[in-house]
Length: 181
Ligand code: MG
Image 1 (cartoon, helix red, strand yellow):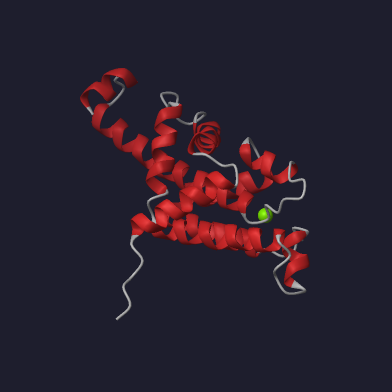
Image 2 (cartoon, rainbow, N blue to C red):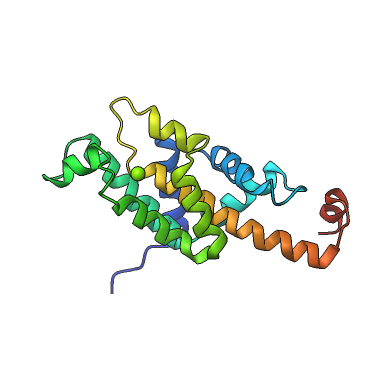
């Protein structure tokens, strides 16, 4: 029987791909911070980055990122067959498979994740905006949605974590919570 792909191998490959395409955990963490800070006054950028790292350990996210980036790269090298090549290369607004793949991966993190994805799809912020606009010769048709997906999943995760902390520690200042937790 052929051996199965280990998560560690998937995570390593995905992180390498993201780095190669110019996306780091801090960039995604900043997007998470911007979407969640209004609801969680005690939120820190570090907590957002930790949440991004946690969702990047999930296979559903890893698979989606690897599939999407692969298609972006193939389109960049003009290796897809027509008419798919043109649809991906031109980021055709009615193509939709980029959003569907990305949204599917973020669904495991509940309604906050899904609504955050919708928000980021409309109001592209931070690294998502950069990917969407600064793509001279580059194809980021899947990547911008995948980054939104990772950020949304991390945001959904944080929303629930913050509530858990609130229930456990009440109104204690964040610094005190961190000392205890
Ligand atoms: Mg797209």
